[in-house]
Length: 285
Image (cartoon, rainbow, N blue to C red; front, side):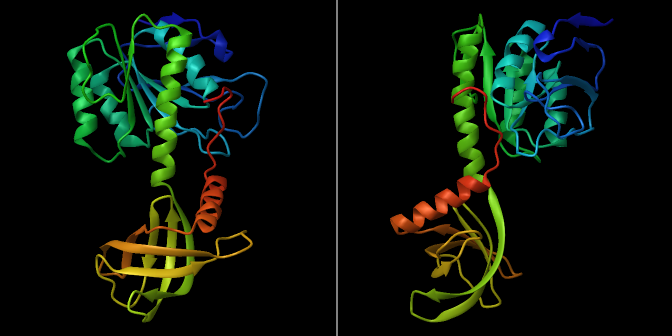
């Protein structure tokens, strides 16, 4: 049995099939035509069979897994997520949502808290799997807490209440993205140990929290090294001081930043922000 509901705010009418186990609805951010980089005056929504990935934009767009059987919630959140430039997969069954998490990177999970299945899904999310832990929003008709949810939205839902909730969730997603994002460098240089000895290292990557290093010389957990690093397309090098958090036999090491001089820190942050190609929301966040 097919159930049709209006999605004219996306530019077309979508069909959902509640009995199809592998049917999901993919909505794309405002202006994106499926399968192309072209922009139109209206956003498009498409239905796709699970497992086929669609390009979103040339910038990175956050991805949401929306778990609900309620077409009214889909309609309300579809508009909100479009304005935040977040693409959305809709899954009608909490019991099948975990399979979608296994198949790709999901930044946000919105759960219609309407059954015990919803609680089971949230427990499985936090038990972990192949996915990075997403931001979780629970939509509930009860005033009781929802353990494990970062944000709880109470029913009945309005566009205003949903938008305010999603701004909070978006801020958390952006923070987590920038905290975990790493940008490849592969820059060879000479680093100084605390005792004054020098060593050759390659800065493999860099992010908000630290750097990845590779060296033929042995690094131990807790070692502190410093070096001057010229980031691509910047005018001057920066002084970086890092502490080793983990090492591998291959010579790789993960390091966290020690205090960085304010001017150098500003250059680093500006460079990282320029590299974080997140599609900008249409509404202020």
